[in-house]
Picture 1 (tube, one colour):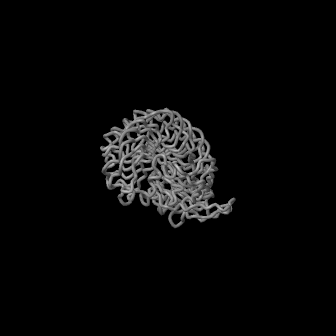
Picture 2 (cartoon, helix red, strand yellow; picture 1 turned 90 degrees about the horizontal axis):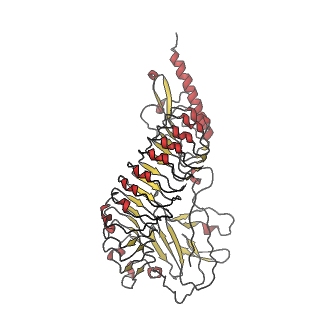
Picture 3 (cartoon, one colour; picture 1 turned 45 degrees about the horizontal axis):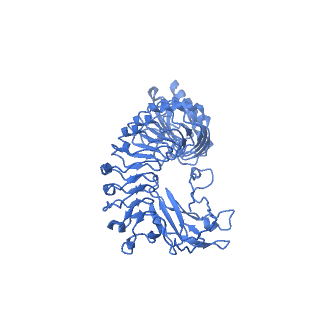
Length: 528
């Protein structure tokens, strides 16, 4: 009996693939479930074959998919590898680059460290590459630009350095690009003008500099563009008016320039529009009533003037509206959609009396630092103490009665080891709320919505015991804010004060896990 030679070839290829695969998983401490697919013999068997289960099936992790259709079914290739959210620890091993037929590689949400090797160029069949939410470092390799079949590329939330390689402009099939919180800096390369097929671009929370490129206006397939929290300067390019397919647009923190709202004129498909802190000098366009798909609008921290159009408060889909820290005048619109339940108009120049809808149930409404008329007849429908939080903060202003205050943020009253009484601050706050203490000694105002976490809480709690303090309980609660959190001392006497702010991390955990990869970045302003 003579065995066909192709059986020996299959066995040899399978042994090589199995050895490389098992070495990778062993190095990361993420062994496969032997009940789901074969890890001791030919890995391209069982669940690894066929259309089902798919590589993204959550019950199979880690997982591979194989293609055994080549050479009349005698040769198998691993075409997909997933090790997702398993807290895999280690580097990207050399064996990974031998799986040259991979089209899909998902290593997201682990604790992979070290650089990406230039050998990534071996993955010439790659279409879907996800390395996001890890601790990878070094520069992004220019060899990524050789993977010209890429459709999806993600290396967000890592510790890379340097700038975006110009070679990535060769990835002309790219439809989704996720590079937010990646650690990169510098300008957006001019070669990115070639990326005409992009539909989704997340590039927030980096150190990108220079102007926002005008050529982005030629990415006319874009539906989701996020450019928040960078170091861009100048204006929002007028070419953005071409992006009429956008459903989500988020740009913030532009400096050294001035923009208008003219470019959004034809973006009536928008459901989310965030243009926070961009030096926008304009009025809210009268055509805002055409944006019936808009569910979130944030124009806060700009120089927007004029009155609030009645049509804005009556958009059929709008739920979240942030107009704080502008120069709006006039009164609040007389009517409001029942769906609009989160409204921030704080720090404007609004005035007049209040419409009947301010007493609506479940409404979150922040009216701090305006010129509204707060009387006994309309005060019952408003947050308690709102009169103390109008512009110039009038309560006890002429005859101050306090010289100190201390607050236990997000928690009950406690007495510290040095005898300080930290007053209770456990009032429920949300996306557009404020609270004044019963004694009118202090107040708090919160504004902002957690864009990427719809079920987020605005307080944090940890039962951990904190070191280097005699008052661990003091740090077990905290206030969380997606935008702006302000505390006010009311009725304070004139004089010199010592301000003590105490911080502790009680949510992001320590250890070699993807859950430890978060970071806090915030500004602190003290105003007298």
